[in-house]
Each structure stands twice: as C-alpha cells, then as structure tokens.
Length: 438
Image (cartoon, rainbow, N blue to C red; front, side, top):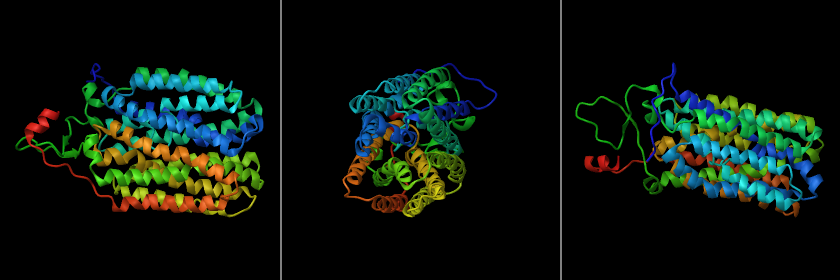
C-alpha cells in the first residue's frame, strides 16, 4: 500500500507539474531511442568494423531487457508511483550511456545496451511506463491533452538530439557524445523525479483534473440520489486479460512495433547509400519528431471529442503512406523529407492510441500492471525485427523495397484493427464485493 504524501497546495492543478516532469523525462532520455541511435550507425560501422545486422542487435537487446523489466516497473508504478523509481531509473540510464563511451568492441556494446533497457527510458512499443502512467493517472476528462503534452517531450527530444547528434558525431565523436548525454540525463532527471513526481492526485488530497470530488467508477454502486457522473471503468489486470479488446490491442501495436523498428534502423543507411548528404539526412530525421509533436497535440485534443479508433486508423494510414517516398529510388533529399513528414503524422496517431488505449478502455487504477503485461509482447516483437530484417537484407534475401512494402501493409492493418474493437464491460458486482475490493 502506497504511503500518502502531505497535501499539495499550488495556484494551479498539480497534475500539470506531473505532465511537465513526464515531458522532461521523454525529452532528455531521447538519446536512448532507436531514432537517435540511427545517427550513430555509420560511425559505429566504420569504427567497430561490424555489419548492419550485427549493430541491429544493440537496439534489440535494449528492447528485450525493457520487456523483461516492464511487468516489474508497471506493478511498482501502480503501488508506489514514479517518484523514486523514476529517479533511480534515470540514474541508471545516465550511467549506462557514460559507460557506452568506453565500449571497445561489439560485445561490450551488447552488454551495456542490454542493461540500459532496465531503466525503462527511451523505449518504444508501449514501454514508456515511468513517463506514460503518471499523467494518465492525474487526468480523466483532460487525459488526451495531458498525455499528448507529456508525449511531445519525446518528439522534441528526438528532433533536438538527432540534429545535435549529427553535429557531435562528426566533431567530437560518438563516444564523447554518449558520455555527455549520460551526464545530462542523470544531472537533470534524477532531481526532477525525486522532488516533483507524485503517484496520483488522491495521494496528496486532490482529485483528477483538479475536480472538487472523486469520480465514480462504472463498476461501483453510487449512493441513492447521487448525481456524480460515471467517470471510467477500472479493470484489474486479470479482468482485462479476459477481454478480446486487450488482445486485439496487443496484436495491433505488436504489428505496428514490428514494422516500425526496421524502418528506423534502415532508412539512414538507405539514404546514405542513395547519395543523400549527411546534413540533409540529419535535417530530414529531425523534421519527423517536430511533425510528431504538432500532431500529437492535435490528436490529443481530437481524442477528447472523437473515438480513439479514428485516431489510430489515421495513424496507421499515414504510416503506410510514408513508405511511398522510400519506394522512389532517388538521391534527392526531398524524398527523405516527404517520408519523415508523413511518418511523423502517422507516428503521432499511433502513439496517441498507444498511450491512451489502456486507460481509455481499462481505467487508470491498474494501468501500470496492464502496460507491464502487454509491453513485453510488443517490445519483444519490435526487438527481434531489426536484426531479423537487417540480417535478411545483408544476406540479399530481402531488398529494401520489399521491407518498405511489407511495413506499409502491416502498419495499415494495425490501425484498422481498432475498427473492430469494442468497449469492454465489467460483470455487475454486488456492493459488498466492490467495498471489499476497494
């Protein structure tokens, strides 16, 4: 059982501080994600003398360890919040990046990438537990915009650190760049989580969205004459696992993640081999997250007015369309920009769906546990796709064109799956059972 903190009194709803810390966490740990890592690939291949498929295992190993740790992190966040857990994870992430600057061979890199995944930061595919759960816990009616604000930190981080990495790798080197990133993460994020993060509004004498009374669960039996609206239905992990909605959701985002990671890994070398200058590649990659930020905000407001399935279908459709510019074999930078802009719109749609689906369909009480259960499946699929696809490309079994066409089909199908999802319902419980559970 979590221990409540002293009541917090601020001129504005404290939930926005939680959003700001989550935004900061997503922003400053972006050097850990696959997009920024792709900027380092060419230098790593030259310095370490390894193939594309061999390097792909770095991201895969990080994703695997993130999947292993996700159930533990999810349950800890539900019980105790992200305050001290997030601070510890930030310190661990920073130390791992500093250690990477001393990597002398691929096996050293494999080990450090693997242990860095336990931090839970910089992971795609549903693994953003220490940054994704807190804002969703503090908001219900305004959850769409709150989560979108926090998520925008990842877009800003990917944009800024991709561009900065392109400069640092060519000036001071990839080792020094990673060391600087590690120091920055530890020095900024540890105190931010330790001083400002809290588990949920009820722990500090507040209610979601800054309301003056608590929301009523759909599964609860309100007192006679109560006019309080039903706010949400809260499922336990076991109850969620018995619904088809959860498994369709897992299938959709697993396909999406499996298709995403090889593209993130292949596109920079693809453009380099096509003759696009590194400067333009860096700008094109940086344009992607700026588009993600803009449309994450748009979709965050839209989801408060339109069904979530509309947002995810839009995301899957734009992700599929983003493959078209990659199919145009041309050394012109304009195609790289066209891909990244369209990809960014799709990323925002699917990312919004991924961040909001669990609290939207299953409530906020056990969202950490549910995220922790689903994340290893989605992350596992994403972790295996880069080395699998990269190895097949290196062996000449697959061509880049085949990969792009396959990814387009999977991404569109993933978004379309939400059209057949139904809002799950809990079996009616007796009032005594509800009181006993609470």
